[in-house]
Length: 108
Image 1 (cartoon, helix red, strand yellow):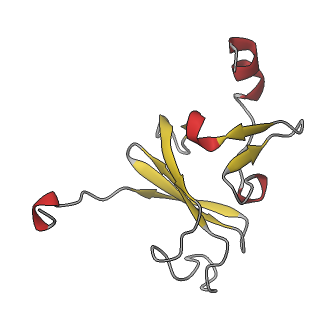
Image 2 (cartoon, one colour):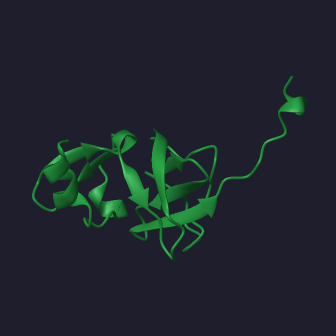
Image 3 (cartoon, helix red, strand yellow):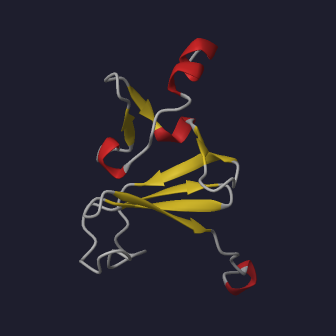
């Protein structure tokens, strides 16, 4: 996107219902944007983080929706630098979590 496009979409709201099954963000004017190429503004003054990747199925990571405890279907995970969003379509929410440190010694 060029600079004027970036300004145009800077305040667009990301919601679970605005994300397609293949990880594209449907913007209010009908344009789509690949989530892997955006920097998201985090809530509560946590700053901005670049999206590093999108896991199209949360299956195997999360079993139930933390909000309503129903089986998590069509969930996905948006991975960022220090946080990740769990996308739960059943409640139309993005749940923000801080990434946990992984002890790589166990895997080597």
